[in-house]
Length: 190
Image (cartoon, rainbow, N blue to C red; front, side, top):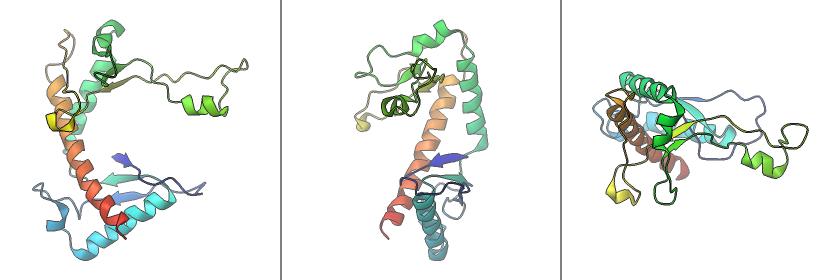
């Protein structure tokens, strides 16, 4: 399951997470949804997405067409990566985020906004709480994106399929994102 958001959430204190079934839109052969989706199904899907974004701010998608084996393989190699010793993971840390904004991040700070606005002062001494979240970003691998191409580092304890699993997953997510962008465009056109 994947989460997407396009509008800020409205006042919905006890709202239920909307579940959007992309099945009618996603064509099994990989063609754009318009080819396999009736006008009524398309409009219902667009209306559901618009409603979810306006009332909650995000939604869960099902029947997105991404092969569960690709998802599982990405989860497996990611778990393997994060189980590595810190020194090995640090080889993926960028030394210059302006030149290469991807790689391993040992402790991503997710609470900067809370600390800045004073809503999370942390411990009694006013020190903001640190978020303990590791990330690994690989970014696009397309010269036309005007972003730096991926850098892969061979380390002894990574599984043989580390690179291929993450590249396959990235490609699937990019394809899904393009499908969702078409739906968002239709929703915004209303």
